[in-house]
Length: 146
Image (cartoon, rainbow, N blue to C red; front, side, top):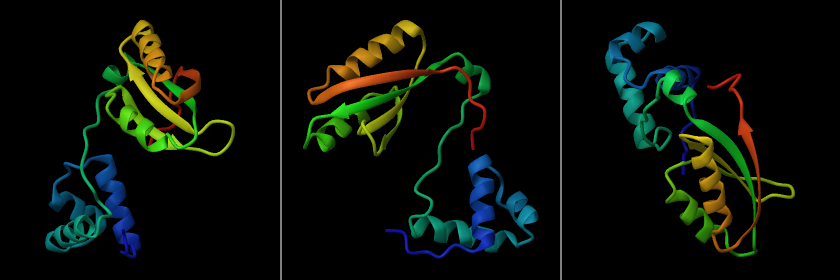
């Protein structure tokens, strides 16, 4: 559980790392107006306190542009959330999974190399035992991504 109170500088630091997690500590320090050792200590504290849980890779717009992405809204049977979450986690094309309120229980953000692969992926999700219904919307473009 994260118990750290974030200062405005911590939030700025997180924003910088979100843009480029490989940014050099000295460059971050200059942007924040802090010393390199202070920035390094803040990063270590944020990692230790569980605010930063890992670092990832951002792929190029050209690569992402070649992918077909969709939101898959999923209705599940009662008491199947844990198992279905595990099965969806095992599918690498599932980029994110959100629990939501309303007539659907989950929203999966998925990506595939082609429409045919997306169609297969959506069928695969629908075949999971306990998935009662899916509704998909293909993402045409992303207007804002942070």
